[in-house]
Length: 277
Image (tube, rainbow, N blue to C red; front, side, top):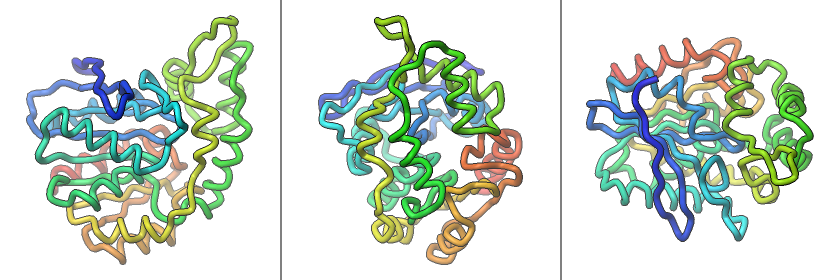
């Protein structure tokens, strides 16, 4: 991993954390993680992109080192507003976006509203109609069933292995390192707002998201895990029919967590995309 720094910015009274992976490139790429993830989830991807970009990975509100929303405001519009405030803070006029899952939805909405600013977009395993997918229903149930605390770190690992049976030991250890904190009681709890995010859930916003997909103007790579239960194959193929700026790649032997499951293939496809544009 190259040189990086941890920083904060203000957005609507929230103190939000981000990582800057430093490089000599002057083109910014902003990376947005998924619903139960964290900025450092992009470490092994960002490291391969430093020839192309100055890379920024955000801890979106309610996760990692960022503040939790006191009013449980975890709607897409709130995340997009935070992203807009970050971009204003940095003074970016042009940028690229990469988002996984929830972060991909946030990227789609931002790109649809700001087509003149976004030069390229990578969407990782997300699209419209997620709330009605098998995976969307599964995640909403998992959010409701997530415990607020654990007796030990081994209990945390057991929890994640149950949620994601195919998770690698490397991904599991990172998830424990970056999403878990020790509580005053001596037990362990999440760094993300379990109660607030469970309340927000995955919303039924399919028609709105389809409209946003159609409004994307920049070169866009849509990456789907071939074993994903979140982004269905027919939804992914419909996205490229609705917008010819979007190209689809399906990564074999990968679930929704594509860059965890098949990092080398993921990085290769992303690298070829940036070389083409």
